Length: 194
Image 1 (cartoon, rainbow, N blue to C red):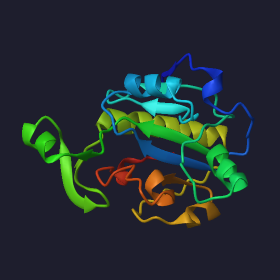
Image 2 (tube, helix red, strand yellow; image 1 turned 90 degrees about the vertical axis):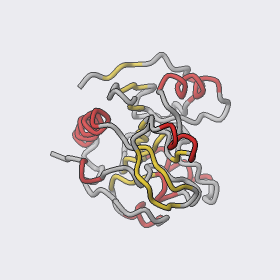
Image 3 (cartoon, one colour; image 1 turned 45 degrees about the vertical axis):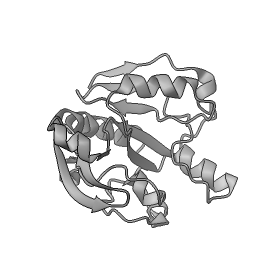
């Protein structure tokens, strides 16, 4: 597995060590390439980022050490202590994917997609096989690094905060009512934990 380290500003994440990781949270970017997301994260004042982002070609970029964290969950309904804990103890992995496609994007026939009504959308860009391969490598690496992270993969699409009751791998949509990532196009059966 090749991880490309990015020179990421230290003021764009919280440099407070949390070594007791319990969860992996899967996200998608809502964009078409990792470099534009990294550029945006470098300039936003909100310290929003994940330590890893997987591009369409399977390239894995690491922005900061996993012992630190950034605000990747957007849990505004929680008190500050729980918000920090859930963000800090979840390792976020962004997967470059547009998510929901507009009818005009679908009409171009440039995108592989599935059709399924879910929250705010109907057409969802597919993830690439290279992304699944890299994601599997990265998840298995993180499970060795942090053995307390559970091997259970939450596949349901529902908002359900009980995911925080067990160490697991979950999606952003499970903990945030407005989020659609990872989208219904994500094929959980392609996650291969060894």
